[in-house]
Length: 101
Image (cartoon, rainbow, N blue to C red):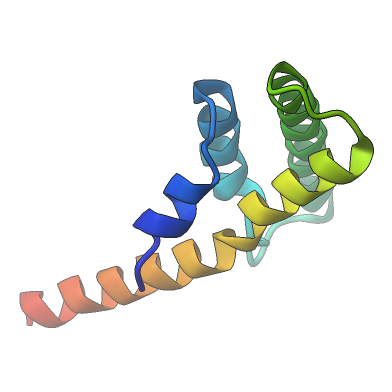
């Protein structure tokens, strides 16, 4: 998996990077959470997505581009990388476990 180029192509601001990193922590569902834990997890994830959309809107506006479609495209490009990051993390973890044996 080569994620460097797709991530660089996004031209993320520091704020977008920071919120994306936080959102990546909440992107996948956590097994065995209580119902209240699932609600909290979901609420945090939704809040981070809204925050990311707002930061993207401001960032895109500074580049002279306006419109909800541009914001939605940027957010979707960022979020579409999360499954690849999760898969890469699992592969790295599996590799470390094999090395320890």
